[in-house]
Image (tube, rainbow, N blue to C red; front, side):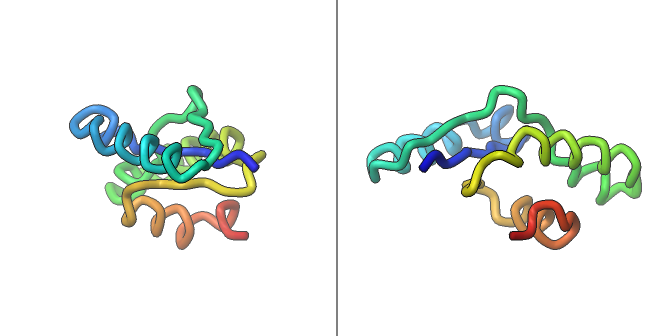
Length: 92
């Protein structure tokens, strides 16, 4: 089974070592990790700022990018909680 790795935009920009460490840990544990190159912002900054339509568009993009995976790993808890609680498409 492949596991998709979601790396938030600000982690990628400011703390890239977190994403790299997450990938290395999963690989060390024998997990078949995929990093979808089409992933973008997940919409939380826009939604928190009241820009719900813009957030919806990015959420729909993420649903397309990650929708084929049975398991998605994210290393930032608040973004994961945002995806799970705000967007029903991410609920299993």
